[in-house]
Image 1 (cartoon, rainbow over the protein chains, first blue to last red):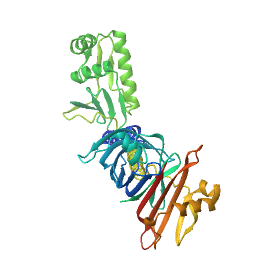
Image 2: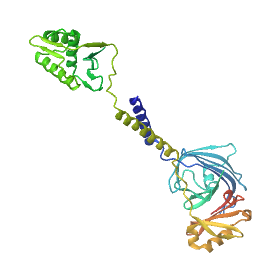
Image 3: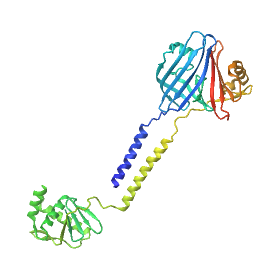
Image 4: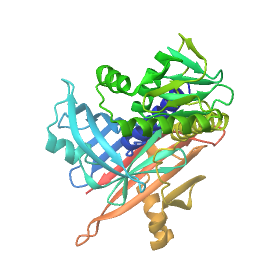
Length: 154
Length: 242
């Protein structure tokens, strides 16, 4: 009886130690937020992009960024795509993303260069200069110390 | 099969021990000593000749013993029996012949538990150890369950002024560079589509993009608070770039 009890205790302790040893210490955050935006360029006034996006950062270090936007002037350009990526976040709110996969819908007719220049305020694969911070109950997404999005919890 | 000697000594030839039935005190025997005692018991009150010991122990157990070894083990058996409280010499020496037992021997089919006699304190200690291990495990499990993950840090946005009746928040650094100038920029940049209404506040930011040209980019977000002013329910933002 005693031997069994000791064996069970040892099993619990060994299990606990292994769990501590191999648990995920880079746990992510749990954020699900959205915003509508309008982005335009002074030098190229034909680009006046209106749309909305949804950002999800899950605790398992996986994230999803969905964007649905269009240029309200000519050229006729529509973006409707989802990025799936892995990420890490540190205590300063710095996001490091990687392994981004893109899933475009058929209506999406924008190439990557145009998308980066006129539609997107931050580059999903940016390293070291993408931050997420909290203000009241919303999130501010910053690149190079400049806010590019306010994101309201869904 | 176990044997009871002298009414209160139990001998287990397989467990290789002698035990006082009353005190539960137990002494482990060397295997050869146990073989010698087994041979003695088989012959009970008859005299077992020295040669019989040599032959039987060799045949049964494959152990060769000398006359001197036999004497030493007999001496050890006597000593251990005394330690267990048998003051009478129950192993009688028949000079130049052999040895015999001078006590009653009872056989018992059931073997006594070959594990060491339980000690109350030891068991108590083990139970405590077990409970402690389980408790430690559950404390860890609960602590991990409620372990907070990385939290998103607070931004350094501060109140900078008002446009109409709506509060404007800006980065602390922008306010430090010139609160009035930054507020003027925010007012200039504010579009009619981002009208100030009840429960609305603005988040404003600007930064230099091309320093040699003095080009700036601007960001303003119009956020609507819930009627109880506790949380923001939606934001719509405008970003103007070069």
